[in-house]
Length: 241
Image: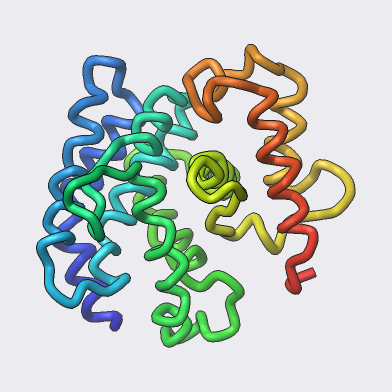
């Protein structure tokens, strides 16, 4: 397992670096380049026989590289591009699917594989904890954000969960999303955890909130509030508390 992860790290290193810098510094004219690698990688997975969740690991690395960087630089238009990019549906080649919906099952299904790693056996979300540790020195070297890294990582995972819930509800009439490290930090009261911090920020700005203006959550604060309210009910029932 660890040898396989190391190989993926080596083969995706340069591409992840480029994706990080593009998402952090890139402007509108760079957004096609930001989404291009995902279209190619997902198409390759589609053509792979006996596909497993681990086949998606390079895409996950790339997605987290761009997503964390976009959040760190407040480039929510870049975050929207990443989360709403259409890629070929691995199950049905005649249709497309957003990247965030394509990735979510694999990210969740990696849980059992990462539980086998030393030090991650008792983690609630071992795949997310591994990614957190994996990217920490990388983002410190590239963007010098070590002090705020945990804040940006958790914030990105909240956006990932909520935007996924918004998109998922269109097809299945219920909002579900991958729960990351912010899940066990969730508090039923107060605003000290990453989830409630985001809700409080959104409430203070309303429709002028940057993520809304960038086009996340259909560009509607009311839609964001609806999704977040429903998702908080899921988090409040987690056995981690």
